[in-house]
Image 1 (tube, rainbow, N blue to C red):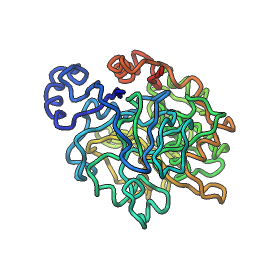
Image 2 (image 1 turned 135 degrees about the vertical axis):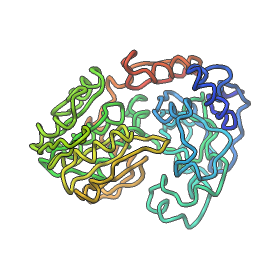
Image 3 (image 1 turned 30 degrees about the horizontal axis):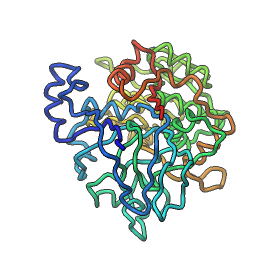
Amino acid sequence: MQTIYVDIDIPRILATQVLGKLWRDAYLSPISSVHFVKRPDPPLPGPYSVRVRNRLSLICGSDLHMIYTEADPHVAQAALPGNSRIYLGHELCGEVIEVGEAVSRVRVGDRVALRYFSTTCHTLGIDPPCRHCAAGNYYLCENQSLSDKPPAIGGGWSDQFVAHEHQLFRVSEDLSDEQVAMIEPAAVGVRAVLHALPEPGDHVAVLGCGIIGLMTIQALRALTPEAHITALARYPFQAEAARRLGAHEVRLREDGYQVTAEITGAKLHNGMFGNRMLLGGFDVVYDCVGTGHTITDALRWARAGGRVMLLGVQFRRVNVDLNPVWYQEVQLLGIYGHGREVWQGEEIETFELTRRLFQEGRLTSEGLITHRFPLSRWREAVRVASNKRRYQSIKVAFVFEH
């Protein structure tokens, strides 16, 4: 048997970056660091390994960052040791087809989502685990640099992959494949809301209405329904989705300073050279874009003592005005993934809480997967996912027929 992979050859990234500056399509050309290849099925590498056949997989913004090599070697995480190959795709629904002799968390025939790609104490077999792994927050593992080998072989952009059982989350039969694949991005929104939970009646803003912004809107409605949600969208189709999913106010490409003053009653002050500042503002701002511009604006749109939760991921250094952090005592927080939460007095995995919210109908995937492709058309899928304005894409999926 052979397994199909779309992966990235790290040593070839630099050459692709150079050519990409002159020719954008170099990132998707045969000379790119991204490959569509067939390799022999790898054997299960250990007793806790699991082979999963993909049923549905999604394209994440971080996948696009890697394809277009939008990474700065000076960012913090770039200092950590890496590996020579990156497998794309972590938002997926798969079916277990083989398990190692010591596997106990899943069985053949189970449908699963992928919780994480990174190395952790659990995938390394470290006992006792570090404090973060012990608490269930695997993305924060303090031992992730101890191995330069990825704990998974393949990913969502493969017809099948091999992973450690701890990386997998078993799901119930009452969820659709679409809901299962959407658990991972939805869990990011759930964790962000829980870590910056508004009070009833608070005014909150969601900046950016891509999939993470839309899932954050849903999580707000599910976990704190009495908060007032303002969504700031870039495109009309995103604005329509934000309204459908529960935002009370949706503004399309409007001046965020004026919007903040109008909705919250904040006082807008105009300084020299176009510099602006608000006194008052939103209780919580969820920045689902994460550029230097949006972080700077979010800090100014939050009231004194308010919070800014950073969800948007950029693998590059940004230029940000942090003055509101000390001048207005605005709290700047950030999350990258998911782990374990406390909700209504219960300790619970973010994935499990997210699964329940889907099961109860308080989260939905309806209308969010806008395009579907076979894996063989991955270049076309990437172009559609990259150009939201032209294709009105929210989530682009790979479908697998076995």
